[in-house]
Length: 143
Image (cartoon, rainbow, N blue to C red; front, side, top):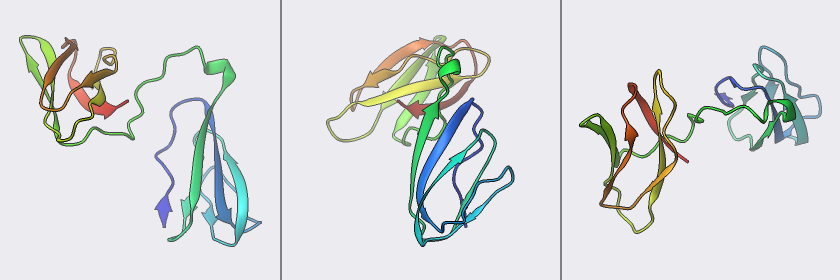
């Protein structure tokens, strides 16, 4: 069985459309879902669901209208590939795109104790300065 996602830390409703039995439901602990018929399940923040091997899921994140004015931190699910390298040079964050191809990688650097950097595009085989190193680098994410 596979867990659907790590628990959400934002006030949002997660709507999941999956192939499940008609008695499938979401609880605050977890629910087991099996494949038989299509069912839509809405999960509240902090709820989770387990899937059986072979289940098909479509996941949609719906932002609460009341919380839309708040800035959300980077979603940690889209980690940049290993060919993206980040280094601090002379107190500035440099991002190197060592990936092949012709398309640029759009990245964002997450910092501890400081705001995350803006989303920047880095061409293959080049580097770019994404901002001052105001905190420890916690990760690099696609955006």
